[in-house]
Amino acid sequence: SRSSTALASLNRPTEIDVQELLKLLNNRPNGVLVAEDGVSEDLTRYNHDWTNQYKGNSRVVVRPQSTAEVSRILKYCNSRMIGVVPQGGNTALTGGSVPLDCEVVLSLEKMSDIHSLDPTTGILTCDAGCILQNLLDFAAAKDHLVPVDLGAKGTCQIGGNISTNAGGSFYFRYGSLHANVVGLEVVLANGDILDMGCTTANLKDNTGYDMKHLFIGAEGTLGIVTRAALLCPRLPPSRCTTLLACDSFDNVLNVLEIAKKSLGEILAAFEFIDGPAMNLVCQTQSKPLPLPASQDCPYYVLVESHGSCAEHDQAKMDKFLNILYEEDYVVDGVVAASLEQMNAMWYLRESCNPSCVSSGYVYKYDVSLPIPEFPRFVEELKEALNDRTFCSLDYFNWGHVIDGNLHCNVVCRGNFETNSSLRERIDRYVFEGVEKRGGSISAEHGLGQQKRKYMAKLHGSETLSKMYDIKRLFDPNRILNPGKYLPEDCR
Ligand code: FAD
Ligand code: 2HG
Ligand code: ZN
Picture (cartoon, rainbow, N blue to C red):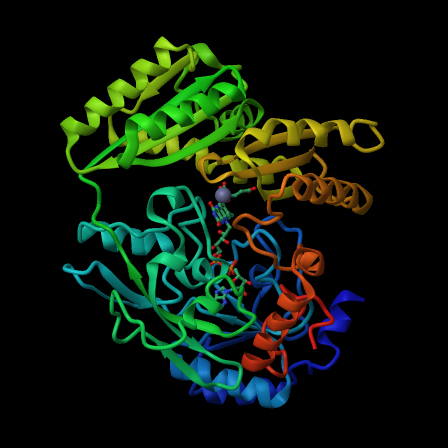
């Protein structure tokens, strides 16, 4: 089976291994959580993902408190050929953070110190296990923001964000983590600790290969991220949020064009939610749509500006909205008049995922496409699945439209079981639909268990072979996150 191939050369942790690991953590109570048959810890939460689609069977969770402890654990597991699954907040949506079987889970949850925020450079240094919301709060109290923000912020960790190269809602404005991580500390499978600009944390440093980038988005397959230095911009003194209703996708594109032109440098986020997704969110979260006259619009758009001068920004926002109404690009719109209203608008957007997940089995897709292609891609998918062989399906779409990133969710409502032939059929359509449009099958959620099978189709053999070389260099025994990311013939 898939898991037995990936784990074939690895050992299951034994009782002796557990004792050794415990010693490496100075016998600290709860340093190692063990699920003995019928006894002690409930390790369920470490063994399934957020959507409940990936399940592992790990009996051992290690919770180091320092980089030195991570190093000792990895050195030991490497010498014993024991598979290790790095785990942050376990919010990944492609099964990357869940063990295939009984690998050791290395949770970063006890490494959550925030070290410093330099007010002149804006560089924040922290441990990998910091929950993103805590970092956002810490930075905000010092008049800064963290350049990544996403719906899972209350649970996900910065080390997980870096390891997935998470995008989120402000990617357009603040850029990717490749742009904003200025230093990284990583522990390799053999226990070696690499300090790649984390301690010095310079804004500019051209002294050698910039290897930290290999670990950004590597989903824990090359090393464990233990510490990071992030470039944080100032908190924008002026923020304006508006929710708009559009009667066609063409008008969403028109609004986007006008936003880029008239909001210009203050444009910070431009997200869309389609009508079915918005209705689902309002129903499941029991929240009213703040546009009562436009309950059944096919598309909603959330636009936010970040600027430094409220008067100037307000003038720009007024001009933007005036053009939209004059040109009939929107049928309705509301501007948040308070922080509470702003948060309520973002709550609707950030509830798309939880509302879907709670309503049935979700076949989840996260694609990059040419933006005008979004509706046709979805229509073709509906046509492809329209023969009613399967349970009745609902389609909920939303995403970071300004980045060309569509989240396309097919839901079998009220039914929480997977159907493998349905999945294969949707997978096939999505892959082909993305390929013919020159898009990407994973815009921001990574590969995990779900998409590694496509790697050989996505990359030329020369490129793939260099990826294998990199994996061999950093993790020759392939103990780190086995069965994820790279395909099985990674030798
Ligand atoms: P985990 O799920 O624990 O792990 C993710 C991967 O990274 C795994 O492969 C794991 O092995 C590895 N890993 C974790 N920590 C480390 C470490 N310290 N060192 C090495 N490897 C590590 N994603 C987006 O990109 N944009 C979004 O807008 C977005 N919104 C979301 C909204 C919701 C409601 C949910 C549930 C998820 C969303 N996601 C989004 C997906 C997910 O939150 C991100 O991928 C996030 O970055 C994962 O962080 P985590 O700490 O939960 O990592
Ligand atoms: C979002 O932007 C997240 O809401 C989750 O990336 C997307 O659940 C999804 O499909
Ligand atoms: Zn997203």
